[in-house]
Length: 344
Ligand SMILES: [Zn+2]
Image (cartoon, rainbow, N blue to C red; front, side, top):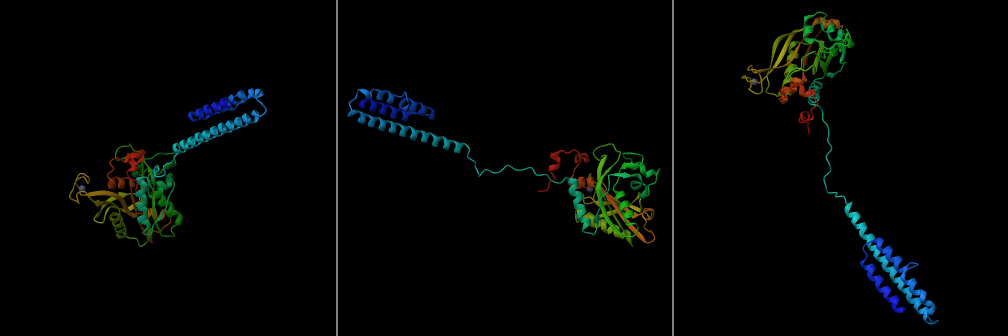
């Protein structure tokens, strides 16, 4: 029996060593130590032993049991440790890897241009005012000296919501609203940026929706030379110190006299090229002295108050400044186009 137990011990240790899984170890435990296991089977023959031999064999059997248990536990621990190491390895995080960049949006090119112009005029003491895009016929036309049936209305055909409500064709109604609000008492020095609409056939240079920014300065003793000086500062700050300006006579119903302002062409330095259509000048904006009728309709006495107004299109300025050749690009939401103008 002694030999049998030793043989079982030997075999068990060998098998534990070769074991390749926790499950297999479990099987070995049952095979050797279980109720129907090999050691129990051997001990069934204890009855045939003498009184002296029984405790000796019992002792050996216990030692063999202990040894096998110990070996199985040790091997099991090894498996568990190995599994843990493997898990740690597979779940490892490389903290030195660079992070994934987050896409950050930026202002639309037209918004950037408008903000640039706003900053410039705020620096000259102007306030920024906004008004509704759905406007009344009165503020969009009549208060600006464009009575019903005025031929200049044809150039500003728009989208009518009712007979009297329309999508504004310019930001000038914001000027009219501000003058009316100040009731002919306070001086006005304001700019008004915003979106305007016209019934137009869209092409590379026309869009039924575009942006405008207009300025108005009403006070006692405002002169044409103040207008010219202001526009000169604007042109140099916006397009470069070397730019010259020139004023040409023009017509607007709400200003008298009216002018168009050109800046000298940057490409040819005034010699004439395809950008300036051989003229050496590029048209930038319209301006003029506020019409006495517009002043008096808003409650300002034209004998005491005078003023100037100007209006320009940020779309056109953006196209000139950045060489954009199609106005529709601003409104098509093509991210590839828009991203080019995000400032870092
Ligand atoms: Zn030119």
